[in-house]
Length: 176
Image (cartoon, rainbow, N blue to C red; front, side):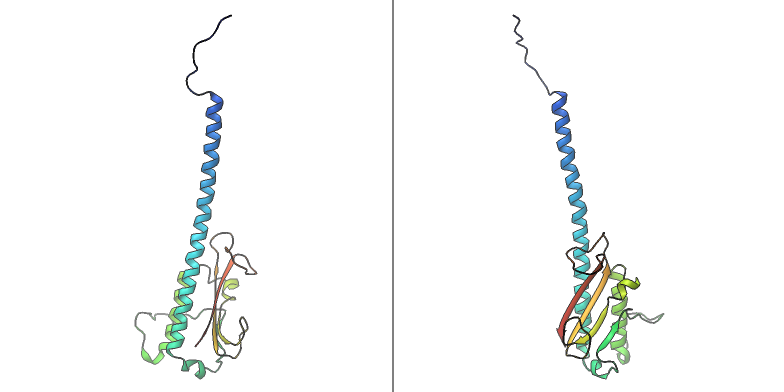
């Protein structure tokens, strides 16, 4: 009977293949997690920008609350298409005589620059700024309601209950 006293040194091919498989699965998981993380970060950025833009419009309207009463259609500021500055007009210095209208036009221009897909008809049809007494129902009232919409950068809006899953919505109501 021959006894082999020689100890095996190193790794077998099977151990190396199993280790390679485990490392590959781990790396694929990290890549998938990174992609999802980017989608959540982008969604968070657009939601934050929508909140800032809505608050900016609220402050523009609060600065001249009499414009709500003076408007012939006081229940509705605009719906659908965003207001646009006239060609050649800049938003850096605004004359006092047309301050409210020009501020809202410049605000609309900023919305188009910061939120993706706002030129799309399906997205712009979701916009509205109006006076209301009941949430989601424009009409006469004392509460100002603003709803902004944008196209999701990824496949769909994250944590959104919108009817169209790739159009994200942000709505805020406040008293003027």
